[in-house]
Amino acid sequence: MSKEAYFISGFSSPHIGDDGAVIENKVYSKDLFCEGIHFKREWMSLEKIAQKSMLVNISDAIAMNAKPTLALLGIVIPKTFTLAQLKELSTGFETVAKEYSIAIIGGDTTAGDKLMISVTIISEVKRPIQRKNAKMGDLIAYTGSLGSSFKELTRLLRGAKVSTHSRFVTPVLKGKFFYRAAPYVHAGMDISDGLAKDLSRLCHASGVGVRFYKKLDKRLLCSGEEYEMLFTFAPRYRKTIEQIARKTRTKVTIFGRITRSHYRCFCKEHHF
Image 1: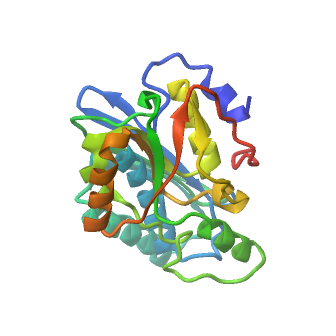
Image 2: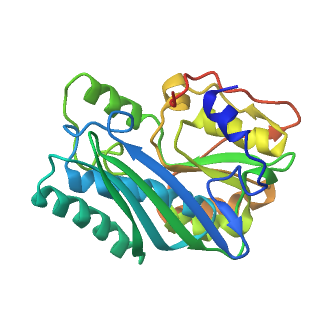
């Protein structure tokens, strides 16, 4: 068991286990975005850092078929930051908040040595998509193309630069597709820690396994920070899903089928 899984296992709430906690018609989700863990300040501007910290949280809401409405920010700000740098951060947060019609309603700040960001998103939901509802025989699919985030991270770690429009710097969320596809989806989540890791979480939650239609490349399976959608649906809805994909200009790859076996991730843990 990973340290992350061990820590989470210490809490008994039935609301834990998805991209967000569903309570009545609300979804509550939180992600941390920490200097030295998720990014280095030389990799992107402060405005881009703030934008990405918001986007990765909104991705969780989309994966739950929820519409984000409110946000709370918690920030550890380096003591050396100037007013201009603080303005960069606030501009980044506000830009994404306006794009998704989210009101930033408060939070907390404190001083520290490194930039640490915590974002809580509160969303509205009528029919939440959760990880536990995959059915036997379901097809398994993901949106977009996987693997580029790993390549970009490798370049950054080697001291090279990447475009500000790259997937690692600026995730492209798939809300336009997923909200339309949600009525036909049984189970789903976003791909934040890699397809293999997140697929293992979905399979564990549903008590199922997976049969792959073809062997997938390790870089594709283990590439984190993708923020694409991973989901299952009944075979009879395949044409409907493909039609929604065409209308929203979203690439969808069907790569396997839900079975009665089990699936375990072989990729290196991103956390700890």
